[in-house]
Length: 90
Image (cartoon, rainbow, N blue to C red; front, side):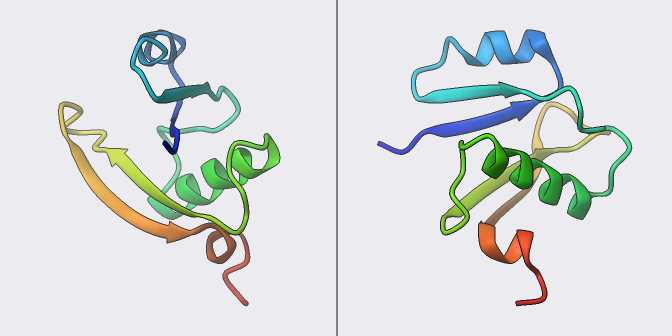
């Protein structure tokens, strides 16, 4: 099975996600989740995942972002190729 990697700026959320089978939580404190636009948030999160060895540059990823306004439900789901996120010019 493929891992589900959940990046979060919340230590509490990371601990809670650690209890769910198949989910690999990653606590990220150096990305400003609240003040970045969606594109920058995706790019920085994927870059962090590659730099830490959790994501390979030749993989596809499914990204779910939760709305800042309506936090009880997700508002963006997308399938992305990591190489295109990190190198949009190629």
